[in-house]
Image 1 (cartoon, helix red, strand yellow):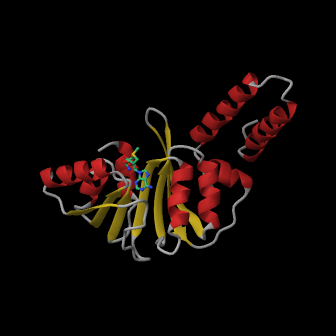
Image 2 (cartoon, protein in one colour; image 1 turned 135 degrees about the vertical axis):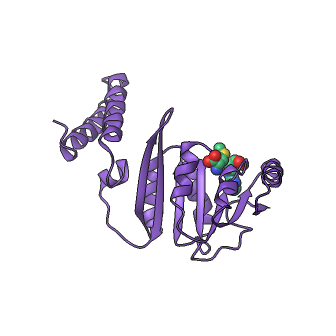
Length: 206
Ligand SMILES: C[S@@+](CC[C@H](N)C(=O)[O-])C[C@H]1O[C@@H](n2cnc3c(N)ncnc32)[C@H](O)[C@@H]1O
């Protein structure tokens, strides 16, 4: 298992867990050593692949075909993991089955973390744990729990308690983006300059 999948697994703190969008089923198989596991995917080919991997590993995993949470029987006390999808795909899955979404979500989106944090907290969750992981690129893994906490723009942008390395990486990204924007797009440039200024100010990087 990759460090990313191991980190996802380490965050599971409930008896039953659903790995939604399981693809190969490797995470589900590993989770099945200590948890009751359902692995699901929208793709029939992925369901077949996961079933074969589960059988080969002699693991106990219930493998189902499901678009998001639609075909899944989830209790509030369970955990749903959604990893390796775009943030908009994750949000779409959650909103399509809002009555089923449990109290614990573990999400690793591939992009748009700011939108993910904002949208999921707007659904009545708070960020319980957030881990940033540098492998060949940065990965952000967030455990959300049901409840309300207030967040500001910077919390949404980089997470409530980001590591200095992650902040510096993002700062550099914005600085590089700014260099590439022609002067005629001055509003876009000003927005990014404000962002850079705020990152420097909030995280004391001057
Ligand atoms: C890139 S793979 C990630 C696999 C695994 N979760 C991981 O993190 O390594 C994304 C998987 O999500 C599945 N998927 C995409 N949309 C889905 C949906 N609406 N419901 C269930 N699975 C979905 C795809 O078929 C694919 O297997």
